Length: 493
Image (tube, rainbow, N blue to C red; front, side, top):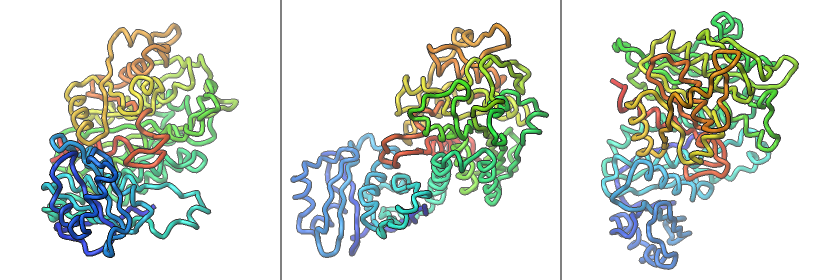
């Protein structure tokens, strides 16, 4: 779908249309609220009383045709004023846009209280909330409501500063839309070669793209990744993206890596049939890296960034990898594959080793829908964070809390690592049921050498089965905003 356009203007009373007002919980009403309320003969005051509206975060009070000039007036709660944040601005903007998503083609949001620093995040939340993936819904698309939101205007005190900053934040929306589109694609359309083809489109933004085919990966010794891919007719790919936004910087680049299993049947260790259709999203880590690279290139980030994704399909066939097989990874370490459904860590093992060996990056952050165990531990609110570096972990935790893409650091240590010891190889690819997300991270750590490293297990956050205030059911694009902000705050000239 097309991303609605966003513009910013000075605070004034709109003459007509559909407008959104924001209020804090049990707080003083804004000047905008008072102006609109007076124009409507105190209709807002009466509606708030009738609906018992208190201004709690995400609470909505909607008036339909309250006067000749306005089709809808929507009041959205912001919660307590003292602890307002970017995350809450995103949520409130999303609630507002979703409330009017199919009711109008244009809406105006009025933000008071010197909201300049938050205005762009109201807009970002709005754009994320109205995202839809209707590419294959032919009948639905024929009947699409003409009132599909196309324009959002934000009225704010310092609109010029907001408009200037929007060029950066709008890039996050573009990268997020790309990530969601990739994750939502069915696996028969988004095979590893097709995925690589779509990544190539980033060359138009100045991202250099290098694709390693099966022959090249065999030459490099990618035995772990290729073992996963051998049961599929689809050609595996490793794609390397480079954004050189600061040529003057002589320091090593930073690197982001993603698991790109375009469909995960579980292989010989086949998954249960119920819910297997969702395994098209097992490439969300790779899609997030691609969306991040688009964001950085679109906003011309002054940083040097590497993106690496391993793209495979985990299928069953007469040539599929068997439980008990032993493969040799790019690091030279051998792995006994006890469970072919623990395949993502095999893909990441080779690309992590390759990235640290070739690029010597300042740090590596990998993203993967790696384990169901992380969902058992953290539910759907936090991604699991595993790391060998306190500074990186603290930065990601702080940013995540602020912008609403939260991470929770999990323990690691020798006792967990010992569970991976194998009888017939250097290691085995699973460590048993207990602490499953931790032993998976311990496995990955064996391939990072001494490079500062973070593993984000996004199995619970990359995809939603019920939708949120910032998007419908399906892909969430978790991580694009988080990692862009990490670069912006700490690694950009």
